[in-house]
Image (cartoon, rainbow, N blue to C red):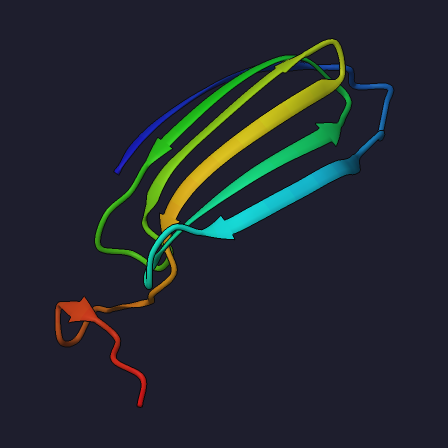
Amino acid sequence: MINFNFSISNPWSHRWKTLWCKHSLLSIYKAVEFNGYKTNTIITVDFNLTSQTDHAGLRLMLGLFGYEVEVHFYDTRHWDNEKDSWTVYN
C-alpha cells in the first residue's frame, strides 16, 4: 500500500456534504467513482494505492478552499487473506 496525505483544515468548521457521486462499472470487477464534496478543509492532497485488500485500487482526492474532488478506480471484489486470493461468490 502506498499512501500520501497532506491537508490543512479549518478547526472551527464541521462542514461536510456530498455534492455529487457518479459511479460506473468498467468491467466485471473494475469500477470508477467520481465524487465531489463540500468540506472544512483549506487544502487537501490525498493519494492511495492498494493491492490485495478489499476494493483494492487507486484513489486520488484534491481539495481547495472547502471543495474536494475524488477519483477512485477500484476492484469490486473482496480479498480472502486465508486463501491469499480474491473471494469467489457463487
